[in-house]
Structure formats: C-alpha cells, structure tokens
Length: 264
Image (cartoon, rainbow, N blue to C red; front, side, top):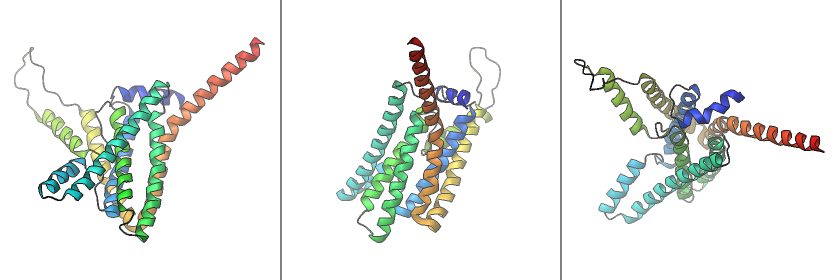
C-alpha cells in the first residue's frame, strides 16, 4: 500500500494515463459527478455543474430584463468558483506541507458537505421554496470542489464534471485514429492517436452517464438519503491518501522520539 500510495501524487501530477490509480479515480469521480448532477436536478431543478448553461442563462435573462433571475445564476457561478478555489487551496497547502493527501482531504470535506446537503434537502421537502437558494448554492460549491480535484491532479487533462471537454477530446483522438498519413515526410510528424487517452476519456464519459442514471433513480426512490452512499464513497476514496500521510507522520515522530531517547 505504501509503495502504491507514494507514487499516486507524482504520477497524477505528470498527467500519466498509464497509472491505474488515475483511471480508477477519474472514473469514480465522474460517476459521483453524474449522480450528483442528475440527482441534484431532481432535487433542486438545476444542473449545478453546467456552468456553460448557467452563463448562457445569465445572458438570456439580462437580455429579457429578468435581472433577478440573472443575479440568481450569477450567485450559482460564484459558488462554483469558490468551491474550485477552496479545493485548490487544500491541495496546494498539502503540497507545501509535503503531504500526499491533499486531494484526499478535499474529498473527505466534500463528503461532509454532501451530508449537509442531504440534511438541507430534508428540510426543503417540508418547507418548499424557503431553503432552495441555500441548497443550490451548496450544491454548486460542492460541484466546484469535485471538478477541481481530478482537474488539478491530472494537470488539466481530465475533468470529472465537464463532459463538453471530454467529448471534444474524444473527437480529437478519434480523428487522429482515422486519419490516413499519406506518404512519408521526415520533416512532418505522422498523426497518431493516443489510445490510452481515448480509453480514459471514453471511460469517464460512460462513468458520468452511468452515474447520472444511478443518481436519478437514487434520488427518485430514496430522496436526499441517496447522498449517504455517495458521501461514503467519496470519504472512502479520500481516506487512503490521508491515512498514508498519518502513518508516515507517525513513523517520523516515533523515529525522532527513539533517537531522542538514545541520545540521553
């Protein structure tokens, strides 16, 4: 476990698509993102990870003179950005402290916020309309955190909620794969597809779709209680690197303690 965990952050920071951890993490986070996006729509009637639609909606409402609705969408955008900033801060802080579990801490905190969202959702079902803005703002903040984790650690190569970029990358790789390199010119590099990247992009897209189906069914039949298994999955994903850091720091402390005793 220690050898595997010690390589996680270094491999992810390179954006390496050869590492199994990156594929598993990307697929898991995409699955959770799809579940939150689809389930959240049933809960608050908003796609809280779709910032392109939110910005377009802001422009439409402003053009129609619906300033209040435009401001509401602006608040959603700001909450998403704040969530991304907060998650990035946690990751950067952990790196400055020479920790490998920065993204794990972010996942575990996101799991806690998901539980809060579930509690707010329960109140929302009893008092419709009163807590809706708070619930939407919180879910946007969570989605901002969620998208940042994989984006930051893959060097911007992967995003767990932004399927527009993933679909674009799939199109690029498929074009490279189907491109016919006519003739051999040593001065011009041949067009070659990155099959590993294509596989990861397809896996993330399918994971997001599968998560959307599961999330929609989960929120439909379980309501806000469906946040419990999602929060548990996130917490489990984040616990491994955090636990590694805790073990490493304990060993370091114990080693120095033994050296101090021997010095006496």
